[in-house]
Length: 105
Image (cartoon, rainbow, N blue to C red; front, side, top):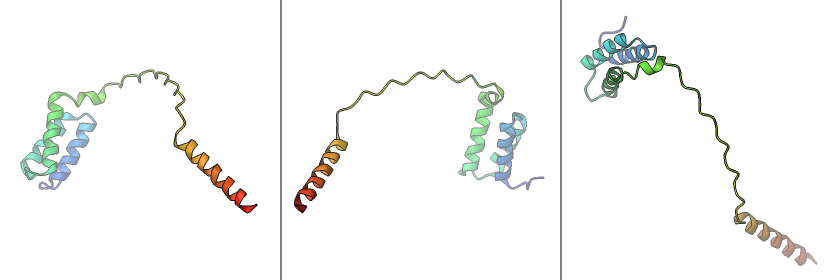
């Protein structure tokens, strides 16, 4: 038995009813939330959205089988790009090594 003033518990239960396809019970709990929750609260807005989802029939989508996934299309092979930072960095490294070796002689 729920606390008659616990609007969050009614919301959670109503959402659970919605998720398992018991839309009439979900509507009852959402309406109870609208009666007892502060109008500017997130729970109040959530109950309004839950009633809207039930009204437009979105709840029926849960019990429908999901469509098969689309066939993946092969991704195009990336084209080689012009040398960038990596080449400059490697060249600078080689020059630094050559400078150190030459300096030792």
